[in-house]
Length: 317
Image 1 (cartoon, rainbow, N blue to C red):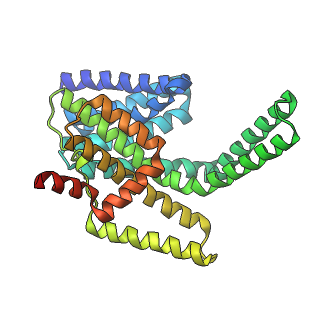
Image 2 (cartoon, helix red, strand yellow):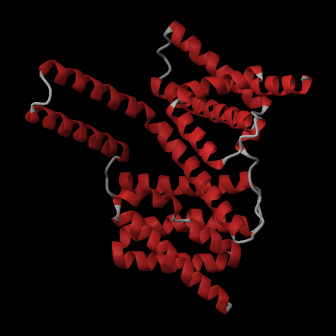
Image 3 (tube, rainbow, N blue to C red):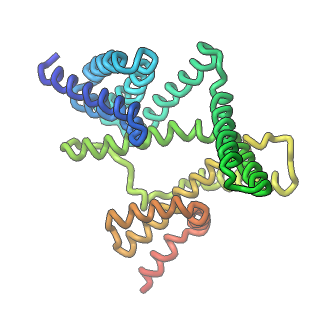
């Protein structure tokens, strides 16, 4: 192994350990856990798979000294399954779609391993533990309201009903969250790694700008079938299909149309030559706040072609 590889391996190992410790000990920086694999991705691109794996092993040992063996295994597996595998993909110059797929699979393997360890090693149902934690938090909030005399009896009853409904909604949304988490994690790591590698001078294969995304025809008709199916189930009150399946499928349908709606808005800003990055960030934030409206715009653009309409009118003029 070359001296440069050893030096960079030690440097990125230290960076991975620092990110882990900061995200673990400082609650305000917990989102940094999303970026823990990034140092191994950059190292894998620069020095190859062998160096990144050795650096990952060293980082796992160091994390074990600070956080104990169980946490070391968890964070080390995150660096290995996501960071090293993505670093290998970047080193081989794979396409953006393939890189995201590798990130999704890597994090999905880790997530399944965590759930399985709770179920088989500790004998605890992971989902039951999550729901029990939610119910306990709700109970503590209600106890605080009762002892502080902030609400009267009627208001307490309404608050309890609202909290119970929220817990039921969370139960229905839990499968969607488990399925969506690897996708978000994979996308975040690829986007951040692309930014860093391009900044230090490496050519990388990236996605087209979101403003230029268009839905494939096959997916368009497949989603239409799902929407019509949900409408028929709701209209005829079909109860043979568990509601959790319907909610999970429709959550993903809504997310897809939300992305297409955001793409439409960014495309319109591009059409108006409003390319300020701050404005684009503001649009993304507002789109998440008004997600229902943006989702409707995504549906309209998918099946009516709004962006093609205003661009065609500009060509006519």
